[in-house]
Length: 195
Image (cartoon, rainbow, N blue to C red):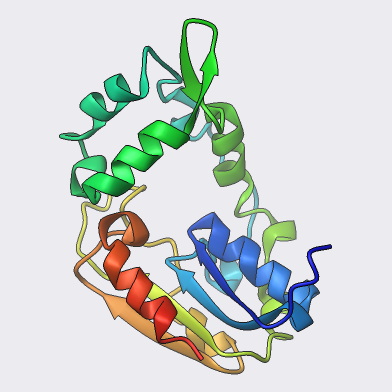
């Protein structure tokens, strides 16, 4: 164990789900949580796995170089809206050398399985949420996006903050689901303002 006490827990998307579970299992570790558009569904949304394969399973997984990846993504949604330094970091550090090229550090089939299984009854985190007694800020994207754009719309239950004993809801219309990628300075300020 790391021996952490009083840490600020910050998590985006599935990371928000994970840090919430960690705070419930190890309450002494955390003093507050910042959940950035976490994949935490409404209480009645944990009904079983997706019926078909998640589209990220088909994402491209091989690149000649991080630069090729950056050049491919910089003008394409959702990456075109990302802060350029964040996109550069993703392309430089989100891949691993593999033979004569680079592959994504998280293979597409693994990432897809996370999404496909997120609505399973065993993923229902509300019993753990009920035990959390520290301040929790839930930042939700309310930016209008195409309903078909599953990756940019918010996966967060609209009433999530009210389920925490000390939860606060922060709605942002400037950013899509990719809040930390699109607004890193905004997220840094939120972290700095935590108790």
